[in-house]
Amino acid sequence: MSSDNKVTLRKVKDILVVQLPSALSAETQEDFNEKVQYALADTPAVLIIDFAKVQSADADGIKSIHFAFLRCDEIDTPLILAAVSEAIRPGLVAAGYFAKAEEAATADEAVEANL
Image (cartoon, rainbow, N blue to C red; front, side, top):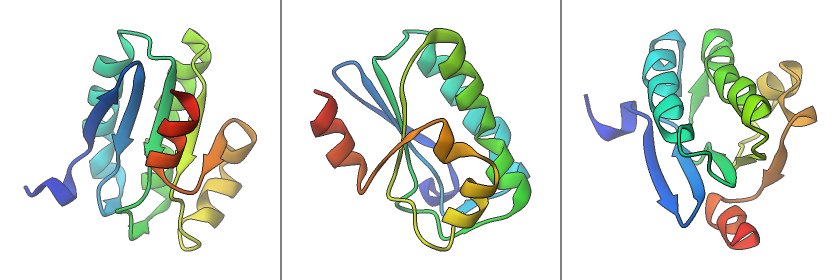
């Protein structure tokens, strides 16, 4: 499986950036949840979900990131959605994610704003 099909993590100081794969589906949920659970164990100051590579997302794929919202609520960590394309935005709006998270044009912009 190439890195375009996997969730990847990067940490900048105490800011965690979760890079989503090119397609979000039910199949990405386990990989996403496992990595987010592991990464949030250290309680970062901010969690950024980066949609820059996402080209498609079905309803199950949109639901697959819900775990991050639950965990961030539990540990009182702000959540930022970065680089959300117009193709993906309607699904995120319908899921109510923008009511629970901030938005940034890019993950790098979100990191800079939270350093």
